Image 1 (cartoon, helix red, strand yellow):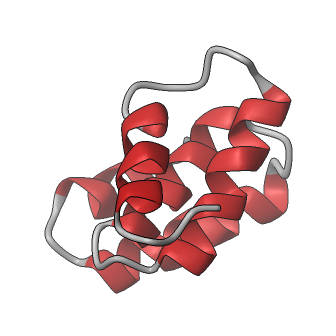
Image 2 (cartoon, helix red, strand yellow):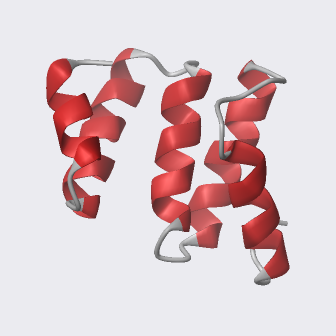
Length: 83
């Protein structure tokens, strides 16, 4: 991950984090860490329709995705999203 993305993810700027992660995803479309981080960021404000496919892609790329991926998927399913 680039330095800019890391700095953006540390702060409370959700939209900035999403933009930075989308840029990273363009450069590395099959990176499970980026996909999982992007999915978790969408899950924070309960954007399950956007979060679930990204988290699913992270699993498809790596059956042992980064921390929090399974929890975000489970949370989405529990709240009526993430089918």
